[in-house]
Length: 169
Image (cartoon, rainbow, N blue to C red):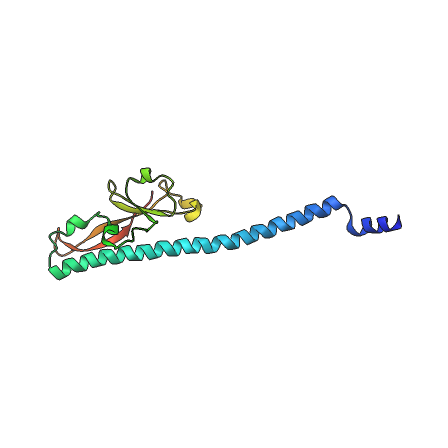
C-alpha cells in the first residue's frame, strides 16, 4: 500500500499524464508538419519560376526571330498567342493541360493551361494559401499574356514582345 501511495504522489493522476503527453506529441507533430510544408511550397514556387523563365525565353526567341528577319509587320499576330507552342515540350509533360477555358480546367491544381478566349497562359497553385489573405483574388489562377511593347517615337509600331503578369482581380 505504501508503494501505491508513493507512485500516486510521484506520477499523480494517470489521465492527466496521458493528456499532457498527447498534447506535447500533437504540438511536436504540428511543428514537424510545418517543416515539411515549407520545402514543398518552395519547390512549387521554384517550378513556377522555372516555367516562367522558359516561357519568357520562348517569347524572346520569337522576338529575336523577327529582328533577324527584320519583319515586325507580323508582330501583332503574336500578341495574345500561346507561348507553350513555341517550347519543345515533351509529350509526357504533365504540367501543361493544353488549350481550354480556365473554367473547364476546374480544380487542375499544379497545372498550366492556355485559355484562348482570354488569351492568357495560366497556372493554378497547389495550395490556396499562395497569396496573402488580404490579396486573395477572385480567380485562383496566376495569369500571363504575351503583349506588345509599343514604340514611343513611332506610333502604332511594335518594338518588342514580352510575357506580362496580369492582375488576378
